[in-house]
Length: 297
Picture (cartoon, helix red, strand yellow):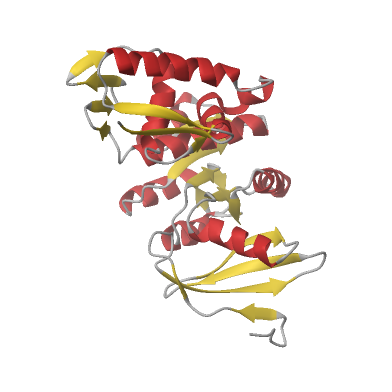
């Protein structure tokens, strides 16, 4: 399988039933400085997914698999100001998101109709139309994309209209990019949990919406951090969950202030004690050098 005259190396069709694409054909184009552009072709779309720096064959395959198996979140930024658009794009790409952009109403409409995204960053004032009309279109299409409105308009009416139309959050310009990243993580996490209102394992049940925990149908009280960690472990039950992943999902950007993960250990210790005392038929086991795993006893 050599390169064609355009420098594009084509792969045979691959099958990833558990991933974002049921059946794909993929290829990559050689770029300068060991960079390649990965493209995915499905029955319905042809799409550039991401530029990667590839040091060797294994790093390319690893990057490709991350995208196909939906380990990289896809963000659409709809913003008409070029400098702001590029600033957000570069920052989020550095944070390992896959970014697509649109700089006007029609371009944004075309993309939200054609593709699904983990999160859409939406400006209200756009050439050719209003961002709130795009929100209405998402609602008409019954799409589940998370939406954060990013706008210089700080009026209460706009915020209420946006949230009523289904926006998950509203961020007023100017804002810190770190705050934007934290909000993106939060809305994506909430959206993924929406299909899991009730988490169950053995005799342990968690009502995510009401933030209630039951063991043998008896309510058990956990503090906020304990419950957040328990929910995260339940969402990843029977899988090893790294300490860094727990910290990032529970503490967000504040994790940078921590020197180590001792604070996680103390929360896990309290969790284990409460689960044991109340007769939970689950256990949190430590996997040396890696993290923790929640399983049935």
